[in-house]
Length: 278
View 1 (cartoon, rainbow, N blue to C red):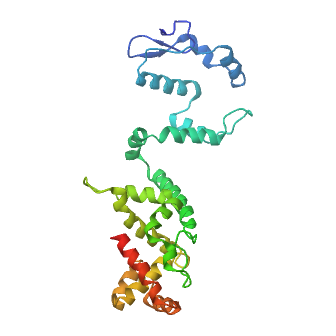
View 2 (cartoon, rainbow, N blue to C red):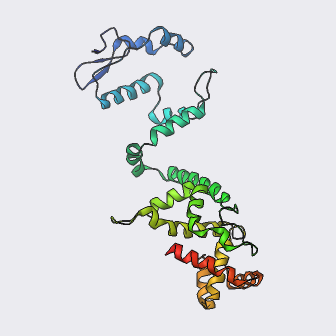
C-alpha cells in the first residue's frame, strides 16, 4: 500500500491527520528561475501523497498553486482556456476548453454551480443557447419539414402533419429538448410526457419560427388562418390570434385565400392539424 511521503519529499509533509504544512526542503525549490523550471521538474519527479481526504488534497493543491505560482483558482481557469501553447505537442486551447466543459457538464457539478452563476455568465449561457437554436431554426425552412413559405400549389397532404413533430425534432433537437424540459409537469402525471408535449412543442416552434422570419415560415400560420376564416371565425377573433402571433393579419389571410385554387384542399389538411394538436 502506498505511504505518505517521507521527509525527503520535495513538496508537502503532514504533521497530523488534518494539517498540511510546507516542507522546509521545498523552499529552495520555490526560488528556481522560470527559465530552468522545466528541467528542475523533469529531473525530480513528484511522489504520490496517499491517505488524504478530498478536501485536504484540494487545499494542498490550492495553496501550492498560490505559493509557487501566485495563481488563484480563477487565474488557473482563465489561463486554461486562454494561454497559448508553447510547444507543438502542448494541449491546444480548443482541447483545454473542451476538457473544462466536460468537467463542468456533469449534473452533480452543474447543480452546485447554477445557484451562484453571475449575471454575466448567465447571459453568456443564454446567448450561446440562442445562437444554437437560431442555427436550427434556419434549417426548418426546408420544404421537407413543412414550416417554410406558403405555396398554394403544394398539396396539404404532402405536409404529413402527423409526423411533423418528428421532422422538427430531427432539424432542431436542441430546441425540442429545451421545450420538453420546460414543459415538464409540475406534478407527477400518468400521461406519456413526450407524447403529450408533441402538440405544444409543434405550435410553439411554429410561432417562434414565424416571429423570427414571418415571410420564410408562414406556411402553417397562413393555412391555419384560412381554415379558421372558412369555418366562420369572426374578423375580430382572427385579429386577436394574429396579435398573439399564431396566424397572419386578416388582410394577409384574405390575400392568401384568394391565391388558393381550391379551398377544399386546405380543409382536410387543417382537420388533420386539429386532430394532431388535441
